[in-house]
Image (tube, rainbow, N blue to C red):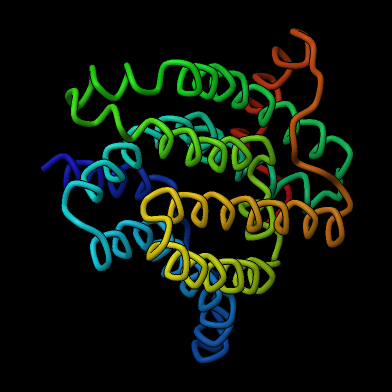
Length: 262
């Protein structure tokens, strides 16, 4: 019900912002749409598979108790990605507008500040998980799940790197480099799944967690380097001041105004 209400409200809000597209040959427009969207579709499918593959592999090769331990750590570690998810929901219009106006230096400044802001709670969570992982798992899921503490720490390291590099994959997708994102996702995804299958027999949940965490690091580092090579700037964390963070609000307000870049 909540999912349906979310879609309904979004449709009503979007309807007020829609405008008619200029007239033109429908075939060429459909072809252009497909050309732009199919790499994003492949990437989305691969992202979904990667988000579940480690659990599928655990379920296929290990016992129920070990799968339960891995699942508990898997659910809890998602808290680390929440700040970056919020950032990724806010920055797309800034990426598009500043890239279109070739304001690369300002775009880099904003991307790295928002990444740093997202990294602050991630650092706090990583510290908490590293020191009190067993106690937290026991408090949230029950005493049996204390044994998943090392799994939680390993998965947290991969998600922590994901936060540190920022929204580099999103930046590539929003600037016309969706093919690059697709290739990076496919290669890192295949390597992650293959290594998890190889490690699960001898190392169990710890092996699968290491493969999942290592694959995430590989994908994010590759995306970060791709942004630098193709767009000329970085998206990872940087040292910022309070004034830098405060200025982000003004930039976000500017993006709400009608843009001259269409």
